[in-house]
Image 1 (tube, rainbow, N blue to C red):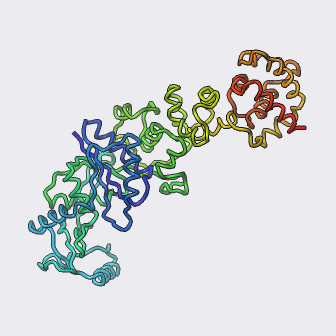
Image 2: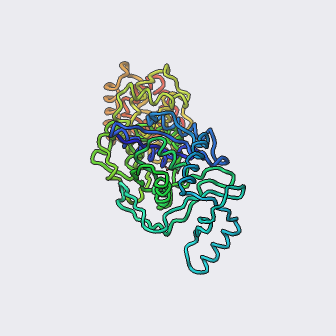
Image 3: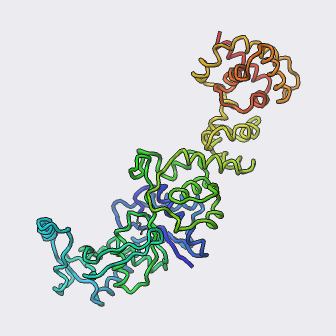
Length: 459
Ligand code: GLU
């Protein structure tokens, strides 16, 4: 049984890269019937905010990535870190160091002058100093040998211990450092497998040193490839929206977000799947080592595929809030019929809801390109169509289709020359469902009124 955790630092809203990390942790634990946990790494008191913590946890809950236990917060666990520190002191694995910032600066300069890598040289290790207000607690790390990380994705990564200095566990004000809390908590939460971003690789051997000094069992590690923008720089707001909320607001369903993010750095034959299927087919070892490039076009493609899987009722449910945002209520005439007619017109719910507007509200203008390409030359056609349609008594798609054929035959015109100007007259652009259906949905009166308006516009 695997126990994984997502350990966000609540210094910003939930980032989609973070969602992917949480998702892979979640899926991996569920594959073994294990547990997925959340730990809030809020030791940076200045940058950590409760509102971010809430945003992160509720965002994951919305996606169905719910923790199996109540999340813990590092800022509330200082006693536990303190006790772990005392254990390290009494076992001789940690020592007090009183080097001042000036001492350390000088040390760095000397090392640089000798062409050496700047690092703490362990000078207080054997001094037997006592704790004071100027001391930090450092880990006495092994001076020789190697630390091997068996990464589930990358294989063996070897670090030379001589390159890793005696890291600080407690600062001079007594507060614990990031690495120290991270290791103590992984043990305390019973974590078996750490799955996190590649940017943490260099932290791992250091954390293994702390683990060993505390006699904790070894953990499994997997470092996920970074998510990059199209220019191969780390994904940021310059490339695309990065917060989960932005994707939610754009009208991507949780199924789409999970599906699209799982494909960032991992691939499978059947590219469209739901969480259950992902849990069945995901293989952590198959996550790629190379960075993954985020592509909004692909996101949109996944979205259209996921939306197509929804039955009508499910589709009405997911689009409802977006229809509301457009000011369109469920009791509007032909509400459901219009949504169904338009559901494949765009790739996300917000755009689809927006595209239904011409059916519910007056047009606020015509698409410029459409006007010059189709509308301007169609005065005669529209006049004739108006006349023909006004005679129809059975206003349904079949009758309307026949009438449209008659208009084409009368002028001997190809389909677009009749249908496109009509569409522009009705919905303002050339995007609408089949024209017969569009006319049916508008009803006779409204259809004739819009065609008349377009005729006046051309005139
Ligand atoms: N708090 C770290 C971060 O947000 C995660 C550390 C970890 O997963 O071990 O990057």
